Length: 186
Image (cartoon, rainbow, N blue to C red; front, side, top):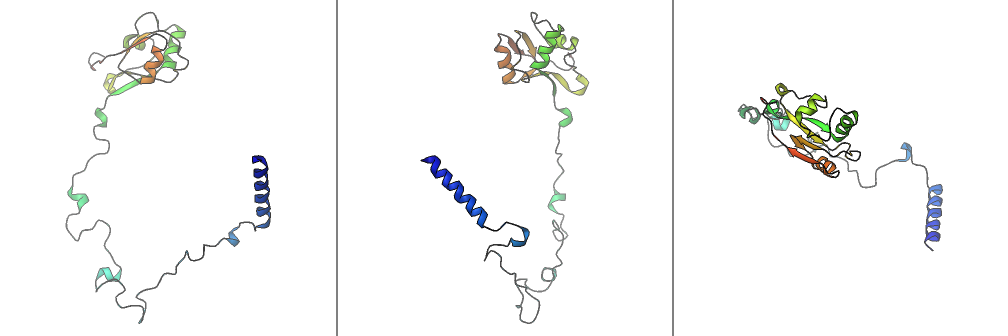
């Protein structure tokens, strides 16, 4: 019964499409009553007295000052101090990303030994990450890219790790520890 109803609805819709004219730029027009003609005000003897513009001056004549002009008073945007959008950006700590896919690749190549604890020294010696303390690098951040293919049991020490990356390592029986290094000890 449902198929019969939908079939008749489809045929009725197709019949309606055949009978209606095609939509083109020539037969498009706004709905009746949706457009209202604007009244020209202040353009002759009977066009109104002041037409909502008040008495003389720049407001009546349409020669308004620019936006933000406050009549000679120091404007608001000049009275308050500047504040940078990227304030303190040059001082923010950065962490080099290390994906689980890259870590698995280093283990497969034999550059990193999964039986030993993996720390920042091992990762830099294996050329897995490059940490530059002079460029505000504070260590390594473990990211979850490749969590589905990661298969090694490792004991890794990083400075930051996402929840999914921790779950990907602990799924295989591994351990993630986070530690802080000041730039001098890096």
